[in-house]
Length: 451
Figure (cartoon, rainbow, N blue to C red):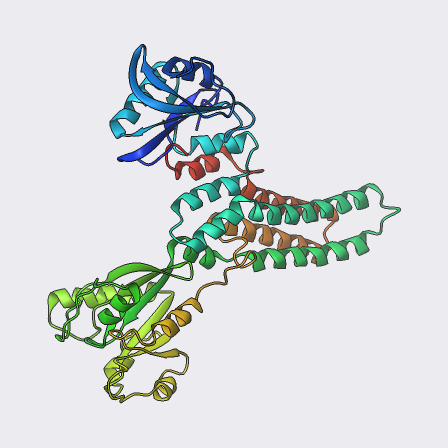
């Protein structure tokens, strides 16, 4: 990111055919550049925050009927002058308009540069900027809800409250150093020791990287079991479509097959795997190895058992020494050779569900069991769930613990203040108050162009 005095332009909507495309411009020359490529139908200058009908012009040649709107600073996304041209959704037309804007003095925006300018101009902090990209990439209602909380400052408010507590401790240390006759240092040290522990505990309790990954990427559920146990039928029934091939021939599935679905707003990534068995078939053997890899990465391992057959040693070995989270007794419409009680005794740590995939029986109960392995959907359930935020918070916890150790070792309060300042800086990285330019660039480099 550089040259923030420039006026930038980019397509703000996705590429491809559509009814409307939006081209966004931001910077001090925004209004002047817009006036040279857009003319209102009524011939008047554009009014602030009024969507106006007119024509996009290449000098005097009309290239599109469009709408344009101007947002004068500071009441815009970037807190600079911003303009948008709402044109017809043709990639060729958008490219033509962008070339006109570049010819008149704008330059193409870098990835995430609009949001980066909003951050640098104080409209949002760094965690809110990251939430913008989370919202764009949200693949489920749960992910959208979490992103909205972050965009509205949920993370920022929590972090700032923790920083204010640390700042208060630093103020107490400064007072104890400046007024040794009035403030008893030993008592102050004991109070600071206790409060450091409280702040560190609060930060650790708020860290949940698993929740962030599941919200953004989905709950990873792997179906495993012997060949012909009913895994593919169960996947098809859960997603409501014929995605996996189902036959009576054992070993039909030879590779992992992943499909996504939503359960109560949570994205769930279901993976059907090759039946786990010893085989001389090279292709099937590769599929078995991939199944084992998927099991090791799963959030939820579902062992599918054919309830019409007795549990065998092959069933017990299907998870490669891993414990199942759920045992799904398939083919519950047939005469049962394995009851839910027997399955519970065989796999005491697992939750049991009896299902009949073709009939849809037991699917709601199975979905409820899958949801029980996901983090709770609440404002406090994943306060610090992004990997970068968690890493910064845990560094702050380490510094707070260092401050406690300094007190325990009988060091002076000014030595303790060094550790508290380090904790303050670590938390500041979350909101961008103490972030380096390099890291800021890396954060916004993950954005799409035009946002």
